[in-house]
Length: 305
Image (cartoon, rainbow, N blue to C red; front, top):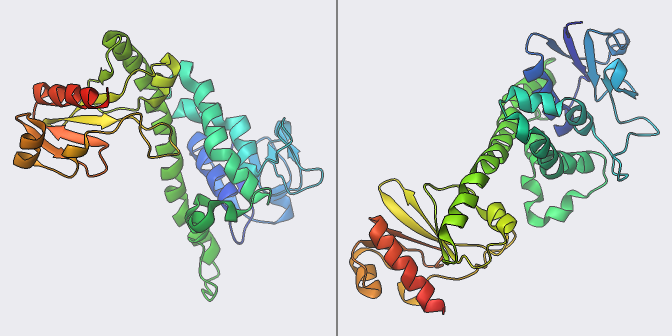
């Protein structure tokens, strides 16, 4: 039967039902999204999906609440929010609707669940304190989405609904951008692996464009590669490789003598005609041609040997 209504609770909103609504409104664009606590709307029916309200989790009946006891748990015992439940049941269809290639859907579904959905679930259930983010806790996605709620003295009878529907496209942009980046990383992996093979024992990896490359380096166990070269507009860049996404430390830094220099000063310091810029932190340099950037890359390798 056609889904005609997507039903969640009225009043104030949280990240979990807002993000769930992003998924469901894409899959069922003709359905009406209704925010209510009226009992007749919370009765399961074949033409409704009910989420974050209703006091039950029953996928067959298309009701996805998590506030009841016992509450639904993941296989590892961590709690679901409504977002986790909706993602578990509809996430793969959502990825297909976003034109993610079929062979990448399972991996991206898992990655998105781990990196994006699970933190929302844990925060919504109080299983993780916002304070774990330290001074950045005010910038977590649930907090930012929560800041879109109406202020306390907005007395409009539609204030909460107006705020919810205004927040929906903002929430959508976060989900779609995150998934698009995961899909791009999956597309890039084959290109990078091919470039690693082509580079052989060289510590310099040359790519045809800027793209994610860390996961491919790890997969190929290409620990010998110290620098990455790629085009950027009409220029070429020489990039250091971070040891991980959790640090700014690199496998190798660019030469100290280049730090913070540009144009003629950098040409003089490096001896490379066409050298244009080196960041003071020595993680990126720029030259105006492939020939010049490869010369700089070879000099950077020589400096660390």
